[in-house]
Image 1: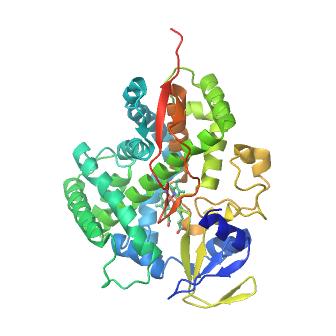
Image 2: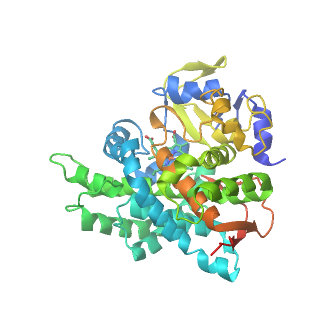
Length: 427
Ligand code: HEM
């Protein structure tokens, strides 16, 4: 049993107090407790404290902040993510995804295995840049930004996991982290400079931020645009990339699910290029993505800090106490889920899904900070999965350990290699 499975067994719905040396956060896994923190007492449990410090230092006053700064950024960005606006973006998204997946044809024809994580990263980035950032980030800027964000995401993990180590004590990754932030700042500030006063009419994140920046008396500066660009780029790419990376080992271990998916997709999409309108006819694809995020909710753990005294499960929580919330652990509780370790997309048949506690399954969090990218993610993930499986049959080179590496997000422990076998097409 892996480390995380072990914690999940011990926690099973109880409120635990962890001993992390200098700090003793609570770990709340029961759906009622999660609801109390994220929803019922969301004003008491805020995004502050030592765990948030590295992110706060990196993205200051962005949508990942708290209070007035968060509210302001959210007001500007929310319109990009309404169901209505997302629906207008889906055809563009399908097109971008098909183009990105086209580049898998060559290794598939040659029978060369692909390295899954960087390929998913490429597909997601090409899509996100075109659709969410209005194609304002050039190829060469993207080539700089993508590995830089990757550096930042991995390096920040040390600080995230050991937040109590004072800044003066050097840690592995500190230097590379600083260098990466410098490269990113140079690129992002140059972009803001170029588009600040004339972003154009698009419905994308970049345009929304620049319009808010230049609005009469807005008081917003370039730093605010940069913080939000960084926040949005990192939340929209790393999460989607990692979720889609875990899909392939799951399909490898569950050939019956892979077979059902292939059959559904062949029946609906056939030899066409996938379109957003296909998704309405692909219910199993949707269930597979939901179950994927049950087992691998890539924002696997997030902390809150109490500002007022309160009670949880009969325990007194004091101001300043940290409560950790983990979709990964709650999604694997034996008291909540039947055979939690099993990958079973039929859990999300609508008639079954209706009966779960609202906070038994919360890959996108809940309450006022609930993920604003959830509709985008769902459409994007379903389109990428469908586009790839409509053309290829995936074959993993070897089985992959199911237990992820613990970091700020959930990464596989080693590279995943996969060969794509093109479907035989009748002429
Ligand atoms: C697998 C995909 C994703 C997962 C698992 C995920 C997960 C989450 C979670 C758990 C939160 C809540 C954090 C908290 O309560 O402190 C969150 C917030 C957020 N997510 Fe996502 N996310 C995903 C994709 C995306 C995408 C594609 C975008 C943007 C396009 C995005 C943008 C955001 C933003 C901006 C917030 C902060 C919202 C706020 O505080 O008001 N996420 N996400």
